[in-house]
Image (tube, rainbow, N blue to C red; front, side, top):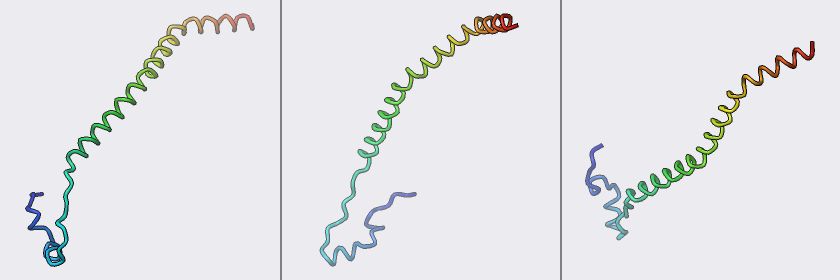
Length: 84
Protein backbone atom coordinates (compact mmCIF):
# COMPACT_ATOMS: atom_id res chain seq x y z
CA UNK A 1 0.00 0.00 0.00
CA UNK A 2 1.31 3.40 -0.96
CA UNK A 3 1.58 5.89 1.86
CA UNK A 4 -0.43 8.98 1.02
CA UNK A 5 -0.83 12.38 2.53
CA UNK A 6 -3.41 12.42 5.31
CA UNK A 7 -5.16 15.46 3.80
CA UNK A 8 -5.90 13.40 0.69
CA UNK A 9 -7.63 10.60 2.58
CA UNK A 10 -9.23 12.66 5.38
CA UNK A 11 -12.94 12.36 4.57
CA UNK A 12 -14.17 14.46 7.49
CA UNK A 13 -11.74 17.37 7.07
CA UNK A 14 -14.40 19.78 5.80
CA UNK A 15 -16.75 18.91 8.68
CA UNK A 16 -13.98 19.53 11.23
CA UNK A 17 -13.12 22.83 9.57
CA UNK A 18 -16.74 24.01 9.58
CA UNK A 19 -17.38 22.93 13.19
CA UNK A 20 -14.03 24.19 14.49
CA UNK A 21 -13.06 20.76 15.76
CA UNK A 22 -9.48 19.79 16.53
CA UNK A 23 -7.44 17.97 13.97
CA UNK A 24 -7.05 14.23 14.57
CA UNK A 25 -4.14 13.24 16.72
CA UNK A 26 -2.06 10.31 15.59
CA UNK A 27 -0.08 8.33 18.09
CA UNK A 28 3.35 7.11 17.08
CA UNK A 29 2.92 3.35 17.30
CA UNK A 30 6.61 2.59 16.88
CA UNK A 31 7.33 2.93 20.59
CA UNK A 32 4.39 0.65 21.44
CA UNK A 33 5.52 -1.97 18.94
CA UNK A 34 9.04 -1.77 20.36
CA UNK A 35 7.68 -2.09 23.92
CA UNK A 36 5.52 -5.07 22.89
CA UNK A 37 8.43 -6.86 21.24
CA UNK A 38 10.56 -6.28 24.33
CA UNK A 39 7.79 -7.58 26.62
CA UNK A 40 7.33 -10.66 24.43
CA UNK A 41 11.03 -11.43 24.37
CA UNK A 42 11.25 -11.05 28.15
CA UNK A 43 8.35 -13.48 28.55
CA UNK A 44 10.00 -16.00 26.21
CA UNK A 45 13.36 -15.74 27.98
CA UNK A 46 11.76 -16.17 31.41
CA UNK A 47 9.91 -19.28 30.26
CA UNK A 48 13.11 -20.69 28.74
CA UNK A 49 15.09 -19.99 31.90
CA UNK A 50 12.41 -21.66 34.03
CA UNK A 51 12.00 -24.58 31.60
CA UNK A 52 15.64 -25.53 31.01
CA UNK A 53 16.16 -27.04 34.51
CA UNK A 54 13.15 -29.33 33.99
CA UNK A 55 14.44 -30.45 30.59
CA UNK A 56 17.89 -31.15 32.04
CA UNK A 57 16.36 -33.06 34.98
CA UNK A 58 14.32 -35.25 32.61
CA UNK A 59 17.42 -35.98 30.51
CA UNK A 60 19.39 -36.85 33.66
CA UNK A 61 16.68 -39.23 34.90
CA UNK A 62 16.33 -40.88 31.49
CA UNK A 63 20.09 -41.44 31.40
CA UNK A 64 19.98 -43.03 34.85
CA UNK A 65 17.11 -45.26 33.76
CA UNK A 66 19.07 -46.48 30.72
CA UNK A 67 22.09 -47.26 32.92
CA UNK A 68 19.93 -49.32 35.31
CA UNK A 69 18.24 -51.32 32.52
CA UNK A 70 20.68 -54.30 32.61
CA UNK A 71 20.29 -54.63 36.38
CA UNK A 72 16.51 -54.54 36.08
CA UNK A 73 16.55 -57.33 33.50
CA UNK A 74 18.88 -59.38 35.67
CA UNK A 75 16.62 -58.88 38.70
CA UNK A 76 13.55 -59.92 36.70
CA UNK A 77 15.30 -63.11 35.59
CA UNK A 78 16.29 -63.94 39.17
CA UNK A 79 12.72 -63.36 40.39
CA UNK A 80 11.41 -65.72 37.67
CA UNK A 81 13.94 -68.40 38.69
CA UNK A 82 12.99 -68.08 42.35
CA UNK A 83 9.29 -68.34 41.52
CA UNK A 84 9.87 -71.55 39.56
